[in-house]
Image (tube, rainbow, N blue to C red; front, top):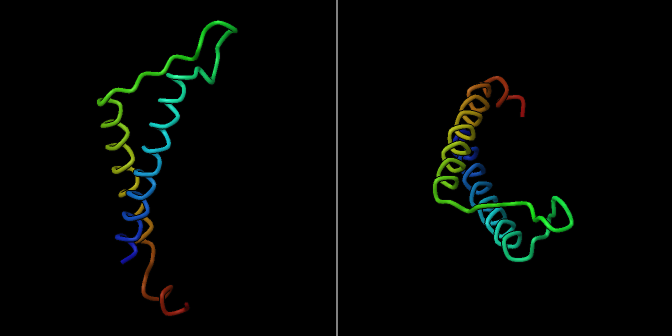
Length: 81
């Protein structure tokens, strides 16, 4: 049960993070919000490969963290709550 909740939270964070990150990248590309110098905008590039790397990293780390946390919950801890 705890493992599935952790995975759900991981996926939810992944989706919202990708949406927010995509919006920020598109805004930076269009409006040059962050500048390195007065005439040079901070360069960003939106590639499918980067998105896949982010998805894989978040899923692996999120599922691993959820598994570790769920494994530490034992029957005695559940009885006390």
